[in-house]
Length: 393
Ligand code: PLP
Image (cartoon, rainbow, N blue to C red):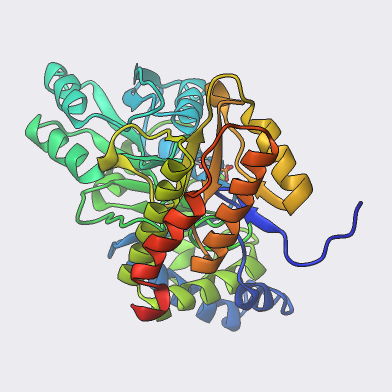
């Protein structure tokens, strides 16, 4: 291992940089998870989590990655052989579809080009055609982390309502929660899936399901086998501040600190910060003469930007050079985008100067890799950031 000075730049779209405050909060002695101190922690946390999901309903917290929270959403609400409607927006929606099939669901998978989000018109059309209401749920990835495309959940909700269809709406907010405006209750979402290692600024290890009344009623009827993921014993134990198994106590300490930080900044300011830094990133990409993968400006992601390289250049080679020379990790191209894109994560514990450093590393790395880019991407970002800095807000 070569010794490096200064901090590593972890600019993948999750796991994200964990603030020192959160690291310190985690590094305290573990307590009895069946004692009164733990109950106080849980009861407080479960309330503080609700505004982040913009819900007044329960949020189930698992010691799991996001994949576990995906599974929980499906097994709690659906039965073997149920039809679900899903959309090929990228790598993660494809993985979630694969999981649904393995669990015994029948997936209507609408093909996509990995440059667009879910088309609400197709949602309405597919549901309107389903006049026997065979489709039990619509599965949507809010922010496709593989592509940097954010689907328009309020329009999807409207499409379901316009079709007069009773399907549940299940939404993955793994790379959008606490970074991009998201409203579980107002948008009529039934299960919101998320996890700890992105906008919540924690290490990996916590999964979340925010659950509507309609989803709770569906859980009473659902027959997919479930045990560890079953909401019911967890919600019962949560009423007194406990879990039916050993929870990830120290991550919960970290979660409390992260939620305090989000409260201090205020969610509207958090979203505005992500929007602005994402816009600065796109200006840099265009300044280099490169293309943002997301093809519809209404769907630009505020938490990451996927940058498309000219055909003959290998994005992983660029990433490798940037890692070796500048000690910065960027996101790799996933699935069919392998080698074609690299992804810049600009979410979580992040500020203007972190962005400037990140873009500086990318500009130098592109030049070092021999990609024919114009200089001036960083300048374009600086000019935009100068107009209203975080501090001036
Ligand atoms: N969904 C999305 C949108 C993701 O970005 C990820 C991971 O990055 C997952 C699901 C899977 O989460 P995990 O890797 O924590 O299991």
